[in-house]
Picture (spheres, each protein chain N blue to C red):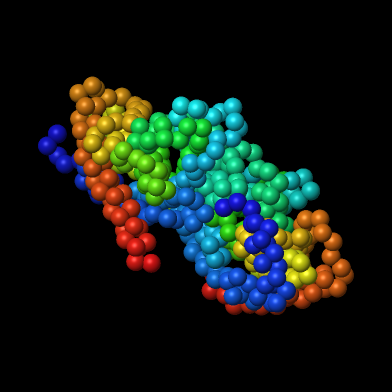
Length: 266
Length: 237
């Protein structure tokens, strides 16, 4: 799979201008989403998310750490994303490049800014000991829209995560003892979705072929009517009107997505 | 030693954990497979043969097999920092050595075949699961091969040899402790990989190799079956 050819690209754009896509979806329609939770037993929580042929694995691990001086009574969050060479001929071994860093940061911001994790409840001893929550995202097959797959994966993995038992006297995490204590999470569930501009059209959930043609994109973390995080990616500009349309599209997509994801988010 | 040795999970001493094997798990790849020994799950994807970059690494005589073994950070109970480690670098190399003898690599001068192995869930024997998945992924990619390889870890717990050690057994401390012997063989019984950590007599090590021979035969049949099933599905599609 090399970059989308110019000819295919022109055809995709032509289709989009008529409101059509190669796979017969509407411009604001997602591919089929399937979710499997608890896919890795040693993780505190985990999920496999497939959107069409795109697949990611997300795992949540927890460990005891020191709080940051500016939040002495709150747990920490560390989000990391790896674009595995296994998942696409375009990804190479080596230190994470910008796309992987951005992917991790976008997931981080949606989770952090929405205050989805109640970090004050993850404090063990003020100024000294708190839980650190690690969210690790791995791509397994990249057929476009890793952004949204990663964000859905992070939320579902957090939803089924259990806090390991901790022996305060011995200062030891009892990893072998099963725990039933869920992570303290808020009721507001942030989902981050990405809307792309291709030609004059706004498109959601692009396949890799479509993603190659994206001129600019906006990733929005939020739910219903509230926005927690946003990032415009790539260098094409957007008009005020277009941003308005993007926000309205996001609102509509959330509605649909919550229905699809409902049973995993309870 | 008349008393039957008790394994913590109730397995017989020569019993493998339940094996799952599946081909075609990564659509983007030229070949891919999943292989699991119980709770140890490995996936492997093959990309290539393709032109070797950087150019100075090209071998005009034969192709290059390049393996990377990587554990997902959450696959073990204490999170591992993402990225390469000395352990993963060594296992990657050992995987290359285990697989190269079965691949007709001389057909691809100046080319490289990339094999990416990822451990999704770990409960010992991850390198063996990785090698088994990689061998299947190479076959799935249609790389010309002389044979398959099958890998198993033989353990010695105190004085007793057992097949396919689990994490719990790996941490055995009584008596002589645990000795771990991962071995990889072709279906014909050629050894392409062997390691050992612990303490064992020459006599018993020879026994261990014989046991590995029997176990790898069983694994080979499961790998072959998964590949055949995939080919059948393709035909029917």
